[in-house]
Every structure is written in C-alpha cells, then in structure tokens.
Length: 100
Image (cartoon, rainbow, N blue to C red; front, side):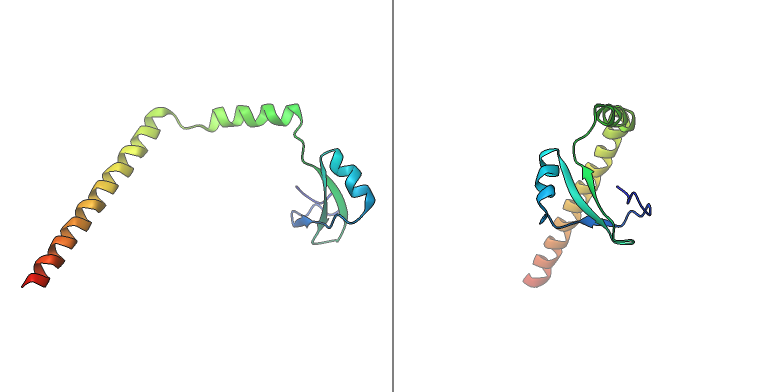
C-alpha cells in the first residue's frame, strides 16, 4: 500500500480515535498515516473479487512442479542424514576420548 498523496510506501497504522474511524471499520477500512508527508487516509482490507482471482492464478503459476519439490526434499533429507551421522561420530569420539 502506498500513500495516495506522495506515493511513498512508508505508511503505518494511525490511531482510531475519531468517530468516523468506527464507520470506516464497519466497511473494512483501516486508518493509515504516511511517514513521509503525514497524510492520513483509509485502506480497504477487503479484497475485491479481481484481487482474489489474481492471487489464485499467481499461486498456481508460481507453485513449483512436483519433480523439483521432490528433488528439494531429497536434498534436505540427505543433508539431515549426513548431519545425524556426523553428530553420532562426534559423540562417539568424545565418549572414546573421555574413557581413555
């Protein structure tokens, strides 16, 4: 979200002390304030149908295929097995060293 006045992305939640804030909240809007120019404005937290469809399409397009997902999991599993074997070897070495 960006400031409608200056276009800055540095915005923060504003206080909700004003009576109109409660009315805007009923419509799904929150008050924001720009850290650059100080303008106070409302942002709708409700997604439009178009935004929901765009997110759904993006999720399907950006999802990695199952082959690359399996490859990544296999690499992670191999690394975990290697780490466990290394930890067991180190523990065995420490025990043997302490017994001498």
